[in-house]
Image: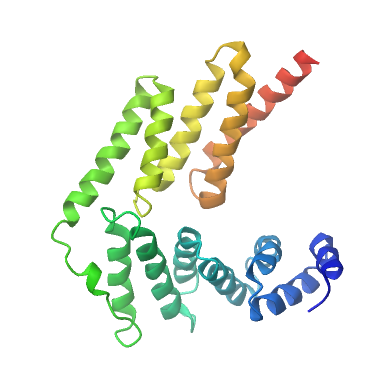
Length: 253
C-alpha cells in the first residue's frame, strides 16, 4: 500500500502509471478519500484511453461510498451516457438513481429527478432494480416540477431587475432546495453571474471581497459543471474577475 510519505510522493509526481496503481490499491481497501485525490488528477489524463471506463466507474463509486450523493449521481449519470455498452452500465444507472433518491430524502418535495432515474433504470434491467415504495406515489409530481421552475424564474427575475443580492440569495435557496432540478446547472451559473455583477457595481471598498466571493461561486460551478456548455461563459466572467483583482491589488500596493 505504501507509507504516507510514499503516497505524498506519488501524489506530487507526474507519473500517471504510479498514480493509477496507487489509486486502485487504495480504492480496493476502502481508503476512498486518498484514492479520490489521485483520481481527480487522473481523470483528465486518461480521458479517451482504454483505462478510462474502469477509472470513471471507480471515480463515481468513490463519491458514492463517501456518501457525496450529488456528485456520485452526476458522475454515474455521465458514465451511463459515455459507456452505454459497458458491463457496469446497469449498476451505474442504479447507483445514479439511488444517489438522487438519497438526496431527495432531505428535500421530500423535489423528487422529479430521482423518479426519472428510477424509470431509466427499470428500462435497463428489471432484475437488478426494485423501485422503492417511497417513490411510487407520484400524483403530486407536476407540482414539484412547477415549484422548481417557479423558484428558478423568481431568482432570475431578481437578476433581471438588478437586485443582485436578492438574486444570489434566491439561487442559494434554489440550489439547496432543488438538488435534482433540471435548472440546477443554470442556477449555479446565474449565481456566479449575479455575484460578479454585484461586485463590479459595488462601492470601491466592497469590490475586492465581492470579487473573491464570485471566485468561490465560479469554483462551485466548475466543480459540478466544468464540462458543460456554459463553461465558456463562466470562464469569461472568471477571466474578468482575475483581471480586476490583479488591477485592484496593484492599486492598493
